[in-house]
Length: 121
Image (spheres, rainbow, N blue to C red):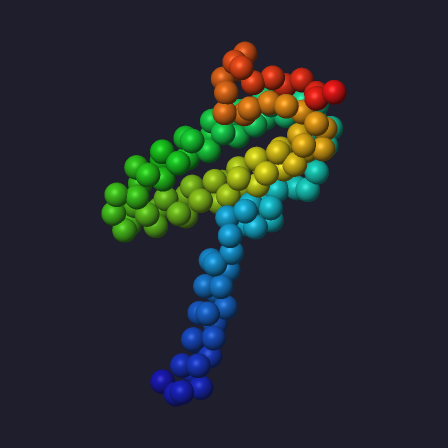
């Protein structure tokens, strides 16, 4: 292999791997439609947040279960990571929208718990 070919392959590999260095939040923002939750009220935002958290926890369990060995980590990354990043982006968008609407709720609390989905006055 010539030096030129080696340098070309190295540059290509560096370019491809630089996409892996992007933060999860940046990747999540890329995968979610901006202002997706603009028409949601506080109650709908709280419900959507709880559903995103439920699914995210489910995926975290699946990734942990798959991550027992190298092949499992690869499968977990390929199969679950894109949806996980999308859910992170959705949660960021839900939080941003709820702040704009001055909603107060704790998505981590169970429905009907201490968290309120009322608007702050």
